[in-house]
Length: 271
Ligand SMILES: [Fe+2]
Image 1 (cartoon, rainbow, N blue to C red):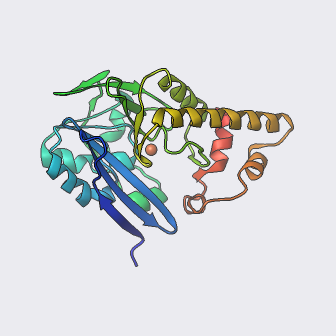
Image 2 (cartoon, protein in one colour):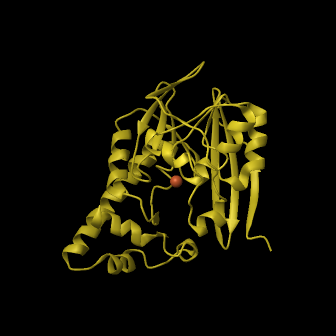
């Protein structure tokens, strides 16, 4: 029995300048889509190692001259070692995680089983702007999901490559080390910018992305208010989680609680 299964793989084309890589992994009742993007010579994130063959075919088609990363997680950097060697191209990531990329990933079992591992790869620090032949991208530090997280913004064309900043407008589960108040600051920072289409690493191409990021921030502000009220009534994080998020998704069991609503609630209380 294979534990994981790549369900589909295709490259769709919305904005003709942006080439979209998409693939889906299913494992033990959990299913996740992964999107990587190619625009003006650059590949944004490389997907998990399980998708090595598919992303390699995508790159053979589009021939990137550089790889830029939104953050160090293995579903965004899993094929960087392979692709930098195969295509002899440089890779960039936020300076904070350069040391992480220099060694093989130390990844918890549930994530390794789902995505595969990440080999070490050579990387350079992202500059403040990434300039290509036909476009210029502002690199904006947006911590919260991870502390090294960045997004790439082209205000002239209203395009935002958002990595794992957006994901969903009504977040119900997060990873253990996510800092939700910091994530909210990052969302508020982005809402001062001009963009419309959001290219998300797991939700795909999101039209009216500005409005949805605004909606996500409002949802989190509302949730923060509810959690504060319940805390003042004497409830702890576990009791608040049971009250606000009574249903546990499969991934919470599968990740041994590392990916859960509890961490969302706890982050509002502790961070
Ligand atoms: Fe991530």
